[in-house]
Amino acid sequence: MNVKKQIRKVADLDITGFETLRDANCAQQDMLSRFERSSLDPGRYCGLADCRSDYCAYKNCLEACWFGTRRRRIREIQAVHKLLSQCDGPFYEVRLIRGSWALPIGQLRRTNITAAKKLNARALDKLFLPDLIAVGMFKVYAAPRFIRPLWVCEIQQIIVGAPRHELQKTLSSGREGMAMSNKLWIGEVRSLGQTINRVFRRDVQGWQNFEKESAVAPDPTKRQRREFYNWLLDLRPGARLIRYGCDQYFTKLTKQPRPFRVTVRRERPYPYHLKKYMFGAREEYGEDKYDPEEVADPFETLKWWRHRHNQ
Image (cartoon, rainbow, N blue to C red; front, top):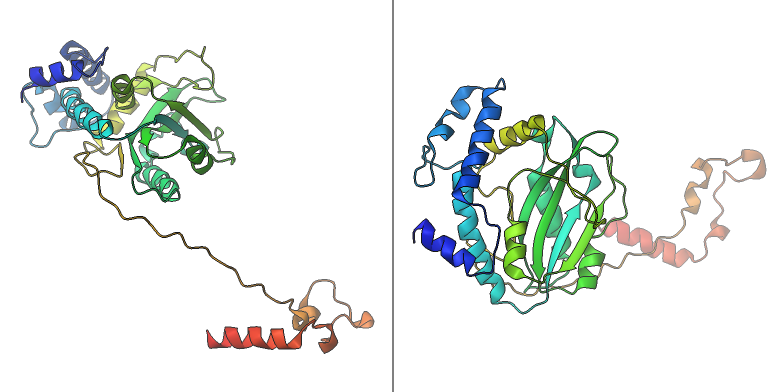
């Protein structure tokens, strides 16, 4: 299927504002101009100047190529829409931020995408729902309105198959991050096509606080765009995608229910025989001597020591 037919199929999904070839060309030219004004080795990006909508200058496409990104977005939007259309709602758009993920401007290369994706997967595993599906992106936003300019790292995804209160309980965290606090926003999806298009955007954007409806996202500066483009050169295509409950082609996986095991901790007796080694034990009061009468139940203590010895 050629690109024109794919674009018509995307339009049939009630998606408006999808980037045109002109938008992709403007992003490509802006990236190349930022690279030319930097100290980056020209050998890393010289082939991007020859890329077109119908031609790729590399054997394997790069994440930094905006023509290739547009082609991948077209395929992903159709596959994700087909996947989610086969599921019963409700659908929730989830935005997850951890303060420890934030990085100062100039250190975006230290972003650990794998760790963020594993944290998200572990949290969803705790729900024990075999039919749960989550698809989305790991994104970075330029946020200059804090104490110092930061890169805000965020997981934006669409989740189906789990109640909202369970998602709120599992994904929320009250811990404070180093640069900013942890944040979680969950909203019900009204327009599936438009939400998929927004979630799978890959361009550089300014961070908008989703807790304030009147907040305006600032435009990234030239320096921030150059750092973002340079970061994309080190990523393989699809490295930022979030897939849970589906394979790399966004086909639903058949999973067995995971057993829920309750861990019962054995109550341990008080270590009276170690009193003489404890802080504050004084010989003149006899607190540093072992008194067998202090043991509440000697048989329970003996049973506990035998259990430890057998292990």
